[in-house]
Image 1 (tube, rainbow, N blue to C red):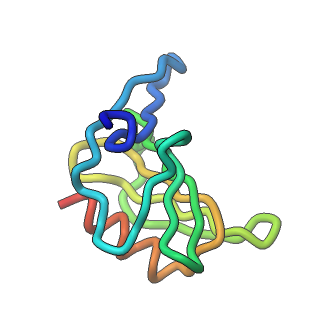
Image 2 (cartoon, helix red, strand yellow):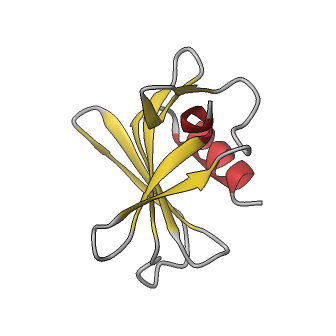
Image 3 (cartoon, rainbow, N blue to C red):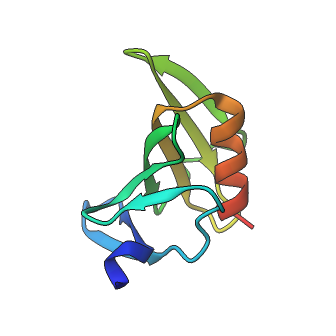
Length: 100
């Protein structure tokens, strides 16, 4: 199913596009009804990718309402954000994998 292999990308004009995600790391599952939601048991999070990295050069993270927000500037000039129940090292590992 094509929907299971996509995640949501939102550009600066708030138009929604889709990115093929054959790069989902082993052990993670993507929610078929919500392609931007991932889990691997204990870790449950949403992945969002902006078409602009807003000048961010390094990964940053913080906690909001007991959930992690982790932002990662990608090599292709986009910005990936993970939000959810996940440890920073797991978020970094996931984003490094999809940014290869």
